[in-house]
Length: 554
Figure 1 (cartoon, one colour):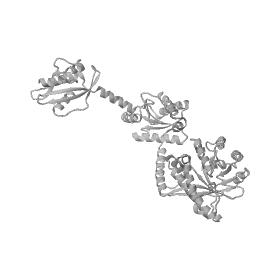
Figure 2 (cartoon, one colour):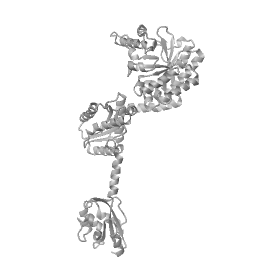
Figure 3 (tube, rainbow, N blue to C red):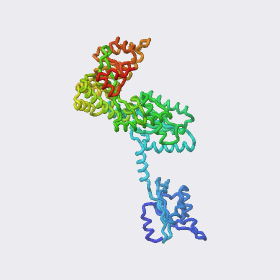
Figure 4 (tube, rainbow, N blue to C red):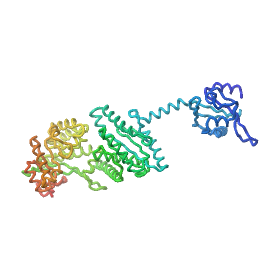
């Protein structure tokens, strides 16, 4: 070995081995003689060094997991390995192995490059990237890797696996009303509940801001899984934490990773739609409904762009005089591909997707435009009532939009009634009351729809700035039944509201017996098929022009 090469190798701050090939009589390389090791190598591998050992002895004593001999032959042939690593028990360090062939000297140089710091850095970095700092669980990135490995193992070993996705109910409302610290506490409380169930075969992840995912294996049947899921749900109930969960199973529901996730999410959505604070298992019907809703949503976007919605108007009458009070504006949708789509189907979907805001704006604009036309043509002084979604009402700029429309069409605001549902009471009631007060201050009327079927109470009625209360059809349907329960409730509502100075409108009046009983109870107005069905604009126009036969009745 030349003095220059020896000088260079002595000064390298990494373990180095220099070896020369040993050939048999045919010229084939059979091993290597180690002719040089520097001091750094002696520190890293002193436990296996002997006096000028052969490479086969040296390499075998280090580890048999690395193909040392093949690597050396490949280096001689000009082929190199970039990712071979070795851990030294002597130095407790990780090394990257590099081999270089010097053809002039016929030496192969093996260098052990210390990568311990780099490896530790990337280990910590990866752990940081996949760990949620708040809960200590792996995050969504960690979930993706673990879930893929779990399903591959389940597929190979033919065992069951399940995915439970848990969504914290109303977390955004908690953050908005009580502050982010209160929201963070709920997240940590959920994490504490789940930590009780963490096992080798139960992996838990922080799946999103308000979501957790649980991967479950090692269960023998669906019944045993149900029992375990019930335990998790009961633990949340014990802590009085409201969560919604969805479960999908491998291979029962699907063997595809993405479908497992999508099916669990569908089940969560189903739980949310059915009152929250419950766990649902995925069923194929959920996918059918999901696809149907996706189709409707796509067509609804097109209908909005193409202005293919239609406005109908249902008349309201004074129960004693029979005089027309006005009309309630009702949106209708007949799609070229899907046919007639009920508002009970597309309105909730529009609220979920946010399309209710532009749709509601169109309904309001069309109704005010109609009011202006009828005022000009017939000196119409009846009321046009327009349903406004809580999402639309509480959205930014609604009151200003309403004022602009009234000013643009120059209609009498006292003839415009903004109709809200009890859903406005669920979230941010203070903001809702303030906006309703502003609406009433500009001269519009305010009506509460579907009273008694949801969240309302006497205290709410006292706080809301109302003019009118609509009694839901659910009470009117059985008002004439012999047990008298619905009749008693309806009479009590009317008496109470009358004392508060509010008008009452009974919805869904379909026969004379109902009408007569409501008259006895001193209900002010009726709306229903008995007196008039929802009608398109041209029939309403004809009716206002004096054609009483234009009115659609039962």
